[in-house]
Image (cartoon, rainbow over all chains, first blue to last red; front, side, top):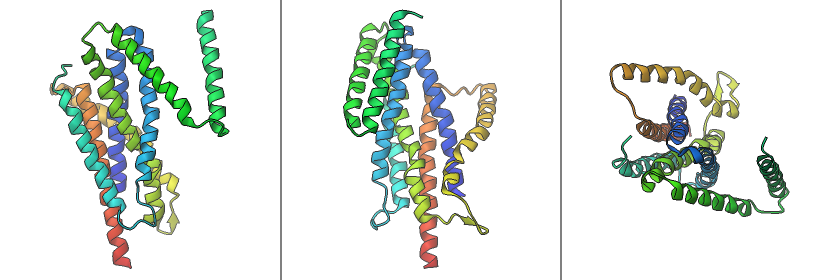
Length: 96
Length: 171
């Protein structure tokens, strides 16, 4: 059940992140650079694959006993919350 | 079509194909191809920065900082579904339900189904909130997205914890 719920929440986060990001770029990019910035956005997604592999490498292997998957995912969750907090700081200065 | 555009398109296609071939045949490491791409991005960003009419810092924050950085982190976490989560299911999760062994790839592929199910619900909810004069701004939506990603990993952690506890109880 928690796994299915996790998938539901991941679907919600995908719905709220990707379309809005693309919309955000197309809305605010200067007309001359719209396509370039969209390309840069997709390049940043490609770079996330590298970060993903780094995180996956840190995941507990079958032989490691000190780190469990429960702790590993908990660290990721806290890390994500911390990241959201850091990202919120300049949000104060932005007027939509 | 403009001949210059055609020339650039053909050159880019050939270069890209050559790059993919060189990487695939292990002649050139992928880092060598990534470095020019990063430099190219930096050049484009510099161009945008120079030509911006609005306050350049604000444009940078609006376009680069929020959607791109958040997307990098979001996709890095999202792709865990196909790497560490798959390993977690493979080693630690009992996938047999009533004698039927569910393939692991099925378990990692149920997320798109939830996207299809959740999209209309999410739209209705946003319309309802709009009716109540509670408009969620795009940046806040992105933040909701990143916080729900954190909730996802909390739930995965709970799932792994329950699984560990059950394994200890059985042994």
